Length: 170
Image (cartoon, rainbow, N blue to C red; front, side):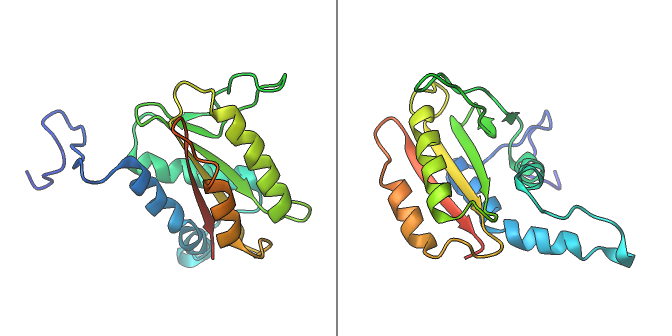
């Protein structure tokens, strides 16, 4: 076949040496570049402009579809402290949840960190979540110390839940 990664039934045969977490991190690490490219369309055609968290979710969802077949948007998390919430994306087969935040006025480093700590506590009880990938899109640079925030949040990882934080752009 001209495309050796395509199996007999048209399904992808992924090499086991490329874990799903690495593929997701690669997608997220290039997110800002993708957004810039979407603004520069041929002949000035209209495009999506990433202005809020829903726009970020839409673009991330489209990019995840390149690599994954079963992406479940807005699954409910189990109750935690009397409330439940919706996760952004569950990749059930990979046991990975992708949680998305976009900074804005009033949602800087402190607020994002607090929200993600609450999310982390909720995901620890979700049976389909072994890895939580927190994607923070910060195009205005509102997070003064992205490496510190990443380190603080990832230090909450446990045997039950691995935390991966991707803040872009840096």
